[in-house]
Length: 200
Image (tube, rainbow, N blue to C red):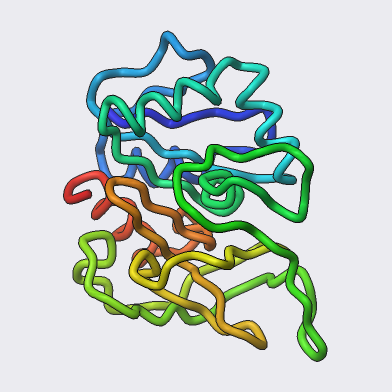
């Protein structure tokens, strides 16, 4: 049973379709009493940093997610803004994030390429990790204007180049984050989600 957090921003339909295709059971979480004890939590994110964090706070999910991560050893997969919410701050907003991984999020400062970083790009695996096990196609779909920085390199599983390199997969303990959208990245994205559910 996969816990899928539904924030007040964004559509999680694509993610649910992938979970259904993989034939896993899931539960949509909109309040802190709904979490199952299966210790798997997906945090999909769409929209701005503050609107996402505000949604978690308003649904009384913010502190509950921190508790599940730190006290109940839940495995968490943050997707896009969901990944950025795992850190303490973002230049996109004024609110504090979940602060489960040390680092911060900053806006792309580019000379040649466009912001937002939109479309398919290569994800370069920098270390072995269960979440990328047996993934052969490393092209994934991105849609973001902010990225993680100041994170310890040992927690960076993959990087992507958009005029400069930024972390596109991170892992700290049982917490994982992907800057791209695996649910929109065909079979390789589906495989990553399956790896998280089965192995992480």
